Length: 249
Ligand code: 13P
Image (cartoon, rainbow, N blue to C red; front, side, top):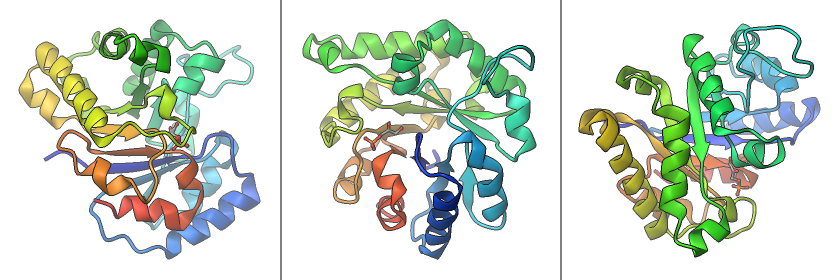
């Protein structure tokens, strides 16, 4: 049985005081679903969040990391540094990283390797832009992002990989992929995995959907058979909204 996962990507929001108060609110929420819950605060607040959530079921994950072990990479953060503050999962390949920070498939493949070598679980993001979808290229784009980022891995590496399909046109726009569009793409992703690694591996990998998931649309999106959870941006910044999504399973 695949895991259900709901992860809140806080992006570049919430200073230390705001992180503290949002975590206080999150701890008051009741969880009625069996989903794994994660939040991804910014680097500077990871340790604090980890400490504050030590005895809770909420996992603290990072939004990014560098592929090198250490060295002259001003401004970057390594896998080891993340582990040293309790982080066991990292988001890699978010479309904002790809678009604004020129993260390429090659770079992401190296980051994936660095994370896995350090036993850090990866939430690997990908998704097409609006022009790709309009041109009917969305499946080809997604397939190439997955192949270039992950298909150098051995099958057993997928025990530590979670996929997140985030169509760029649905991120922060209020526009969501319809539940049917999400299901269609997620089924395509699973087929792509099946072709390379076989059905058993493909069926074991959780595939999250991200892009304007809100309390009022989460249930329908999560009802689709190949949608195993969500990567939540804006709605993760309000504890009630986030837990309404967590509990939509
Ligand atoms: P929104 O939920 O704000 O559209 O963001 C989605 C996202 O990018 C999560 O990583």
